[in-house]
Image (cartoon, rainbow, N blue to C red; front, side, top):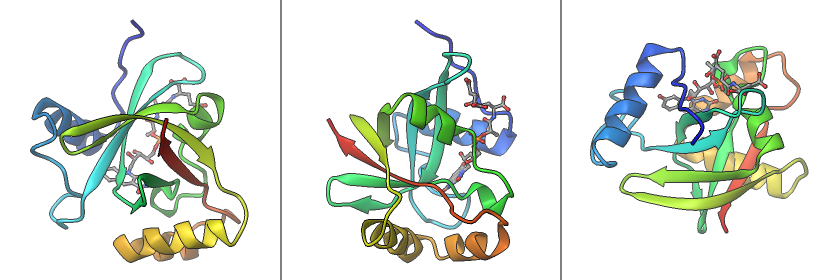
Length: 145
Ligand code: F42
């Protein structure tokens, strides 16, 4: 079994530990915003390690939108590379853990629809879009296998 390597950021690592450690009953929102969060588990494309990534919970039908905003940073989050290499993930939404396959969505109208679904949950995505020099913030959809 590959080893789990936690994220280097304390607040993220601690959220994953509380969320998963409580079986999805605690630590399920973004800090004190009350906005719900999911965690996906993927495989590191370089280390092969187990990686766990909390993201805002953007549910569309029985799928979830994964937005690579990375706080508006100039570079994509590296989990994007993991998903492009290994699209099979486990997605935890509170107490539910589901095996899902991820696909990147490049083209409108689907991409625009998924982006709007994200902004409806977390308007700050539009601030990140304005802040980042990246031309496109990667958008994926995770769908049950
Ligand atoms: N990030 C978002 O981009 N969007 C969100 O909606 C979002 C919401 C959110 C809610 C709660 C919370 O606690 C965090 C949230 N985040 C959100 C932050 C998110 O969890 C990530 O911290 C952020 O997206 C950055 O992702 P990242 O994959 O770039 O993480 C870095 C910090 C990281 O973990 N780096 C590791 C390291 O050691 O530096 C390497 C991780 C990794 O996957 N390595 C791969 C491997 O093989 O193991 C290689 C990757 C490569 O370089 O190809």
